[in-house]
Image (cartoon, rainbow, N blue to C red; front, side, top):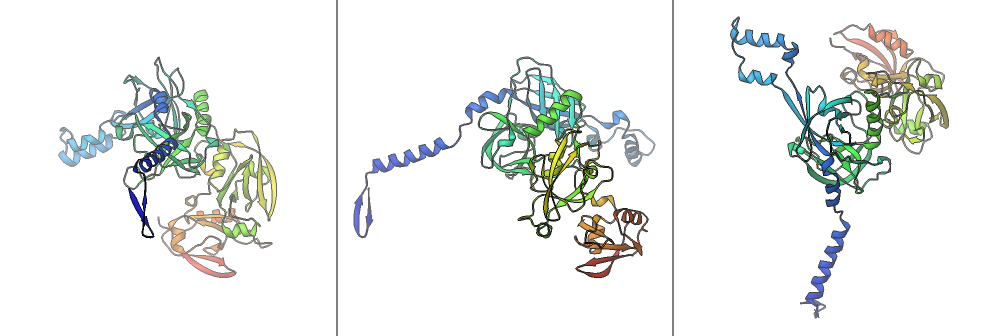
Amino acid sequence: MSLKTRGKPIKLNFAVFTFGLLFSVEIFAQVLPDFTSLVDENASAIVNVNSITRSNLETGDNEERLDEILRYYFGDRVPEIPEEQMREFEPRPSLGSGFIISEDGFIITNHHVVDNADEITITLNDRREFDAEVIGSDESSDLALLKIEATGLKPVVLGNSSRLKVGEWVLAIGSPMGLRFSVAAGIISYMGRNIPNGSGGNYVSFIQTDVAINPGNSGGPLFNLKGEVIGINSQIFTSTGGSMGLSFAIPVDVAKNVIGQLKEKGTVERGWMGVGINEVSQEAANEANMASPVGALVNQVIEGSPAEDAGFMAGDIIIRFNGNEISNSGDLPFHVGLTAPDAVADVEIIRGGSPQTLMMTVGKLAAGNSQQLSSTQGDANPLGLMITESRRGDQQSGVLIASVVGEVGEEAGFQPGDILLSINAEETGSVEEFNEVVSNLPMNQPIPALVERNERQFFLTVEIPE
């Protein structure tokens, strides 16, 4: 083999060239992880979860609907229900994954896999099948604890998700599309991703990966290279129904907390702070003398809450909770929720451009009251506005619009940062006055709202539909 350079041939030894190429490929292959031992060690701990929700006809919930169908098709006669209508009342199966965490048969899966299930069947790797009992299920974290009566079980090893880093190799085992015990590998794409989970709160700071997760993987384990479970696969981002390289796993540290409580008492208690929060804008960061817009901006302090007792004020920026950095507003409910009620937490804030530390006794989050930890919900009022007290020096009139989240407010032209002075000729000098005025507004007619924006006052027209 020869090459030319500047018109002169150069002879190369083809054998040496080939050896060098093969040597390079071999080195590259050695850098890539070998998952075979990991799969061999853990495959027997992975289970298929088949849950069935039976017809609501058995409880009588759909009797009225069934009567309507019968009358529509057949009047007063009572025939067989058409097959296309019967399908609506047939048992609905839900397929998912799970994994064994103890030799006595405890299994972790997702809440949404077993939610409202009448029957749950667990299939082991050796094809044995068992009926499962739900020990407890928690919608807010999307975790459930099941129990089967079986022998010869080998559990997984639970790792530590707090030490994970972006770029680490991870591996998932589960039953995508009903294809049992499938393996998929990838890397961690992001740590601490805050995404909605449909429960009204944000109590999980997800691990984002590019592992090919599909329907059926839900509830299955995510392993690190040590063979430890560091996450529970829960959600995917997709526009097609299949994997797009955006999958989200619940950190195992969250699962340890939730599963421990479910095993002990069947329910989960979460810490409560009692504030409404927003993201910190660049403008707010500049006013607070912060180098960058990080943390959670307090826009409301709930009366009688632990936050009020500790001295929190609207406008505070929370940057650290019990030693945990609050990078964005979604981090706060996650860390507060994991804190045991009655524990004393130190909370670092920025107030008036200066750092402070407040000590707070954490309260207990009431069931169904996720709003107390997340951003103040705009749909709590018909205008769709997140509001807080105005903090413009000594001027006390008006309330500050922190965010516009509803269609009514958007169509009227409200903007974050506006000062709402009055609605329907009624002053809104405080949050309490705002709530009282809004609760008495008429429907389906134009309502004037006096707003101040950039030191200029003008009217917007609001119309609330029924």
